[in-house]
Length: 234
Image (cartoon, rainbow, N blue to C red; front, top):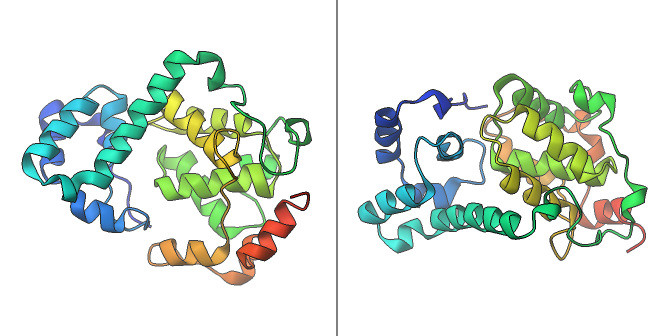
């Protein structure tokens, strides 16, 4: 796995130099891969070293809109989540909508199981991501989605429990972005639940981490098989 760049301790001049070397076109092509060209800018924005609009202006002045569009979309999502939280503060910790999983909110556990907290689940890649979160305070966005889906859908735990746990560890933790992203995965702020399988993890992560199928049986199977297992009431 790529070493994590801790930009949260950067000075402003270091942050601007780092931003100057960021390539949004390469980001758009590779951002879903663990070894892709990602920005790490969320920590800089979180700690007020640079601002969303400032990042937009710097990139817009250097690259074409076509090269930057995907990156700008991610900046826009950050603003959208914050705007929604400002208008609906109660939704930060309450379900915006019902689950679209065939289950009621009361069917989900309130607390994280101990094996998740200790990175000792039956699934190897989940433990790798859990350890990185605990040890570095950072996770690639795709890994965050995998963990959220695993916690909510594979383990039937309320998204609020996972969101609280993420906020405890993440150096770039933004309450609105974090919690509404968890709701998107859970399906309480989306049309359907987000889930994944081992094949998807292998596609995006195998160049960065060793993935042993025998140690990932919990997430192995086709999407049809896993959907039937996770959401039997649909």
